[in-house]
Length: 426
Image (cartoon, rainbow, N blue to C red; front, side):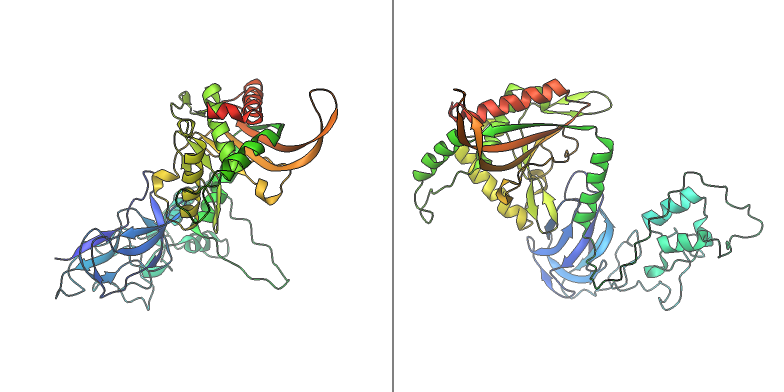
């Protein structure tokens, strides 16, 4: 019996995604557990495994198709000897250009009206529907130019253009003015120099949107401190000297980032008011200390989470973070491994960055920017000039949650812990 393969929800908040590519082709045998496709969510590229056995009879959504809704049919799985065109419940949107049209579809050589004579639903992209609603445009008056006659943004913009008369019937009143209509997108500047254009990935688009929202809607303020690292480096060297050789079982390598994660977790336990989020209903204070750590991936950034970091030792944090970073760069993280967290760390010290400020990762209230450690002249506690390894850290906080004095108190506590790293061993 033919069954639909549906677009899976790979996270609790996922509503749509991009079907990046198929690993199986029509006619291939599929077993439960086989990786059949790759899907780009709003944060990562993830592989999808089959849950049933059969033959991939028909692919309904082609490689590279964006905005595929969760639970929308993306392919048809059939039994042995069953025809690929076996009856399957119709998809909620028409098939993309690469898919095989259903027998009742109008040939794609001619424009397809958005509404069939029998009163079927209008096929339009979510953006086109929103633009039409805001501009007071009746979608039944438009002919779609997208795949399968789907109405797309270009159709709405062409309809609204002053040079093109509105095709609405004369008996229908002109659409009312739409003061809330969005401004048209800023035209892309003409670039005369030789260049190439690389289309944005879904992940990059989401990162751009969320960072813009975070920077424009969250009242950021920043607190910076210089932290001396020599005591920590001495313990780091001593611990790493005890590790078996790299190719031997049980080997390890503790990094400065591991100390930073552990010290951050300890500080959040001592100053728990920063382990929080703002909501319109009230302040949310987290019971667990879950630290999100920014990791660079080809498409941007992802923040895998070290859960309950305050309850873990340096060695456990080191091994867990190394595993998370490796799988993050390979696109192998599970949704619960990068969604959530109460506080973030962004470390660019390995690039020699002297100082920087990071953008808060909503809904968290704070993020710590960690720069490089370098030799600098300092005045020691005896008042004498000396040389020390100094690292500048900057705490970005949401001023709705963390006031200035609280932010300064948190960073002072963090500095105290990191400059006395033996306290982390207790």
